[in-house]
Image (cartoon, rainbow, N blue to C red; front, side):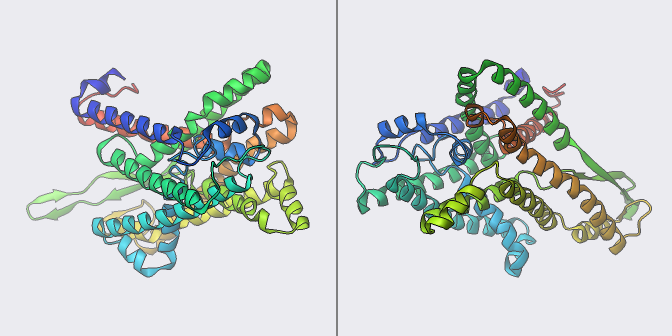
Length: 425
């Protein structure tokens, strides 16, 4: 690790990244104007369980505190996923995606506009829930100092501006720091609440704390193993005489990961399953009771079934739009390459599609099992104290391990460019 700080430019990138992360956490702790922070902290101490813990974990505790950066990176991540999905059905976006750097810059601009729109919707929803007392149920005092239109508008504008600032900070890390900016910020959000969850578990039951730590370490090791697993499809390139020089004649491979979709299906599924909770206040008494019983309780069989099916469906769909076998096969053929034993062109595309489908099945199952682990643990343990403070959810572990591995690989690559062995060896 000390070799990272021996290279002046890499040391500057690491320190710059750490500085942005500190600034990001400061914005998450800074309350928005018009929020009674004393009441918020008192009610946070007594609220827990279910949807509360999911929102608290994914926002780093910022959303329920109504801070300036309450929305965090979720609007930008959601907008990015939506733009990737729209590229499949809108030919103009698909054409921009294929234009290279200029087209990608245009798509990035559209993503920023979509982020602002989603931030307005999210901030309006959060403020409305805070005004009606549904953000922290059971809180005896109002969270806002004034429920007038002007105060609510100022809070919404502050949160939207905070979401735009977070988007800018993430892009700064990507350009001038180490790793992917948005991934590191969501990693920071998840890690920030871990100490509080672990301390609460230790106070409730030291035995449960030890068992949970052991289970968490095993889960992290399993996630690392699967995230590193890949199918290497061999590709050979024939020698070509261009001018007076000979090119090609090398063997390489196409790395196809078991979890090709990453964390996107879990995040998208969580967002969809969060929608029934948002529309619950608009329903009648019977419909509201049915939704609260079946679609907001993580231990209900219907909720688990919908969770698994949505994750598997989104995994297949997202992989199909991010990895195009026909484009990959065409690129291989264009540069004189071929998969040994497979004819170039359409047969290669069919072979890659076959391999991809065989890998996506266990990848989708892996994501579903990982996401269901805490829900199944809740149903088995039936210990309210442990359930409400369970920190090792599949989503949080996958985010931490995935972002951690990706950042370490990028640092390792930069060290190797400077003729260092790297700090992993």
